[in-house]
Image 1 (tube, each protein chain N blue to C red):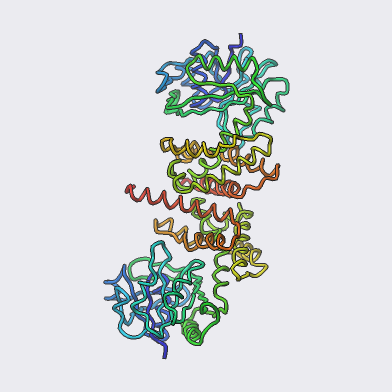
Image 2 (image 1 turned 180 degrees about the vertical axis):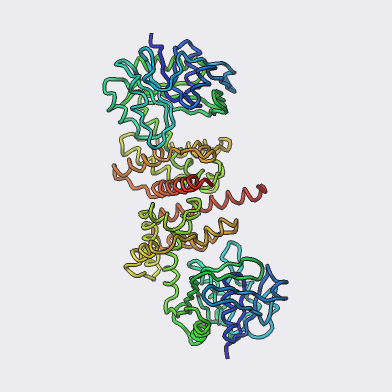
Length: 313
Length: 313
């Protein structure tokens, strides 16, 4: 049957994708810490610009994975990738011998700890291109996009992953299988690595202003990511930089996820987007001075935010 | 006699150095645009932690150099080095055939336009290590330091410059002649190039926090400036990076001038400190990716400030 799903981290992304699967008949439980009481009572209200509004009532609302009743076919991890997050302990108690472990999370070089921890399970990497917000407890607003790419690790797309892709497709969003999802992560990184930190370090510029004024810097960082990806054995399409630059010029001015986090005084995904990229470069002896500079600056920026927060200013 | 001095740009630095020269008997006039009326009426009140408080009454208070009466022995330019500043036209009308042109201003590679514009005059480069503020119109607070280094261009220290140095020394501050003042500017730059932009881009960290957390980045930028200075024929002392790092650790946590400007929403000296350094590197084919990245980021940061200011936020 393969229709038992556990979403771990039911925030703006997790609750939305869970709600889609529930809509097409899956049995979707959620681990939901911050809005637990309210969601247990009322479920989620989903308001999507493209797909309408509906109520999502999870089959189980849990504080932690160990409370899960049953045998999950898919354990889908959707938490933000912030420092100190222990992904293994968040899901381990709900993983059985046949669970697929799906992580829909940002960053590169984040696979190995899951593969190592669950050597007998399928591990599936997911990339979400989505703009959704949790406007208030239990209320998720899906503003735009939604596309999901899924692929097994280290590669391929299994039967069971195809089944999940079909469920998502039937629910109304675009969902594709990628034979080489690690390359997919680098493709996402080549855009994220420049625009996320530049949006924060510039003090809040949107993508268009960044590109118009410092296209050379953006290109030099994209070139570094291009070379790092190649060095890891995941070469990117030759025209990817040109395509990214051209596409970004045609996008409406866009606030990156890191900038949105920064503006709401939330933790940023600096380590998985920049730190892991720089560390991968060092492991493969690829020089990347501008990327390293951005990474160092983001660490300083975060340190300053911490100082301000701890002073209660 | 050589005691007629015109200070152009009588702000926190210009008024203070002018007041010192007046104290030891020089005839000191000032061009003072922002506080003109008040200074014309009351002169300057100088409050120095080290040297006490005194009133400085300029011999002439002028709105522009063309109003200057007499023949200035020294025309001392002390304005901030912001974009669009036309140094030549600020002073030209007060320069006579025997005036020394002294500029006490930040940045590297800023000499040539003065040398070109006044080929028959001595041009003297000045470096101030000083912490002084204009707290309110006409009131200058000298908080710490004060050391001034002066040297003729392209090199040497002339008799007439020695005379000015003597005046400053008698006034109570440290003042030295430097045979190679251009090297002196690079020595200042090796500290300014990392700490000024990092203090702003980090959102306001003081020097100590920057160094403790990103010493490697600071060192890599210092190394770039070291190589650029060498390429221009002004090699720096071999131990300068170690000395700078060690000294900065022993300084009290210090807010850079760029950070102070940033925090007061004033124009920053990005171009003369970073832009000129990067352009010098390019002219001499020295690669400097971290410096270029910092420069590009500062331009984005400035652009964002301009957007906010123009929106009246």
